[in-house]
Amino acid sequence: MNEPVILHATFTARTGEEDHAARLLAEYSKVVRQEPGNVIFDASRLRGAPDHFFVYEEYRDEAAFQAHLSHPAGRAFNTELTPLIVEPTSELTFLCRLP
Image (cartoon, rainbow, N blue to C red; front, top):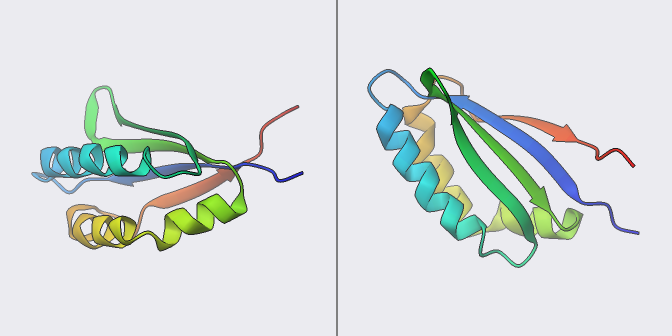
């Protein structure tokens, strides 16, 4: 049986870039949710610290996740996001669902 790929991504927007990052992420969310193997793409900001962003993602299986990674929209998103954030890239944490 193929296991879903579940992950949590975080990043911190640079001062003054919070709203730009939020708009970019909101638009990208719409694209990812249309990918055939995407189950969930839920983007949020930390209440009280609007520079901190959290994304919960789930893909049907590893093949769907790999398709997501190779999607041109993802490369464009990351190219535009990188100069807006403190970290070199989004920090990814992969998760396993409990039975």
